[in-house]
Image 1 (cartoon, one colour):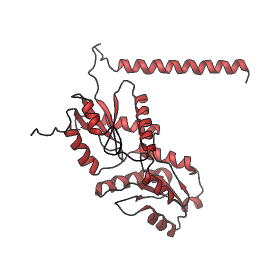
Image 2 (tube, one colour):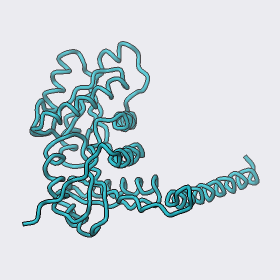
Image 3 (cartoon, one colour):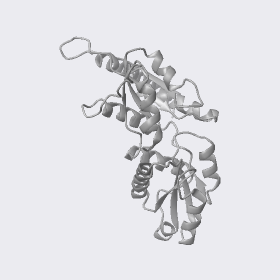
Image 4 (cartoon, one colour):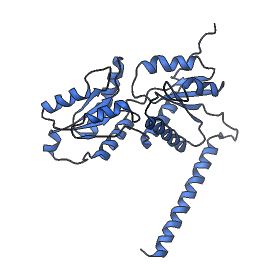
Length: 286
């Protein structure tokens, strides 16, 4: 390639980048204007609700994911609140919003205590008008992200029948006492198995059974000796690390800030604005 051609391609890339920026900004502005030219009401803020972790990588991951959500939906106010361990805590985030409307999108992968108790109670105690979106899982976009992380770790997208018969994946999740949480995790395992063409078995880091080491041993006893760990965690942390250490072969990274995760968050946000989703009721005053 000549220097002139290289410069020409660079100029085209630069021009395309500028045009994309202009298009994004224009789309953001037009989204605020209705067909009759009047300004549309400001859409509810999106509040990402993270669990919180002592591992600094978790907070960095969540913040990166938040920026990706903002990139995909310019003009939408996106905030972050934690259930525990990290700041800002969810009650502080909601207090800062005053009396405006917000949609809470939990960065949680299944139903459980936080979805049914903790987050609704925090939301009901705040002045802000809130709607609570569904947890992220189960959803095909999670299977897409898990597949990508496995391929990054060394999973082969093409394999012969003999290799397939000895391969399996353990879907390592956090675990919950809520039986609906296991149902949700099992559905994600099914979606991933359909994508990979090999068994995908859920296992848990805590609270629920079976655990990851026991599941690995059970699969090996059935002749599945080529076993990968799919990390069903939104961000790095102690549980994700412990599960990865149990891998007899490869261990994928957590879901993290994959672009599909940002798309899923926005999908849950949009979904929550339908008429069938009820707002979180406010607590009665004393």
